[in-house]
Every structure is written in structure tokens, then in C-alpha cells.
Length: 89
Image (cartoon, rainbow, N blue to C red; front, side, top):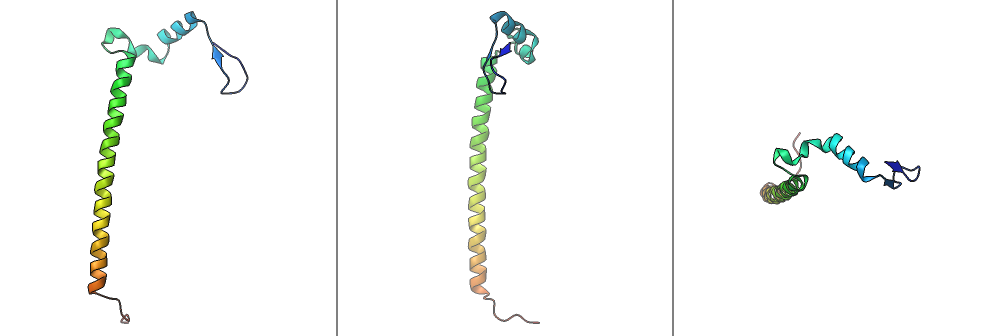
């Protein structure tokens, strides 16, 4: 593989044989079909896991907002019943 320019974002090119060798010897070697899962299937599973995590986060954030709102209401009710006058020393 060769980089066309000198910058970190410059395009690269490679021959297909080099890419095949890199895929075989590189970090993706544990995604071989022989193990029963393809890279595409693994990607789909990760996307679904991310979607579920995002939904769980949104539900927890809604619950948190409701709890904070309830606490603020309780604080306002308490302050209405117990107005702060002059403080005792």
C-alpha cells in the first residue's frame, strides 16, 4: 500500500493481492467464515446492540428528568410551607 500524498489524510492505493494479504494477516483474521460469523453479520449485530443501548439510555434519561422534576416540585412545596424568615443565631 502506498500513500499518494504526505499528509495523514492523503489517499492510499494498493494492489488487490496486497489487500488480500493484509486482510488475511491483519487484525480482521478472527472474522473468518470458518468460525461461523462473517464481518457483515458481526457489523449488523454491533449496530443492533448500539440501537438497543441508545434506547436504554433514552429511557433512563427520561426517568432521570422525571425524578429531578419531582424533586424540584417537592422543594418548592417545602419552601412554600417553610418560608425563610430571619435566621436565628
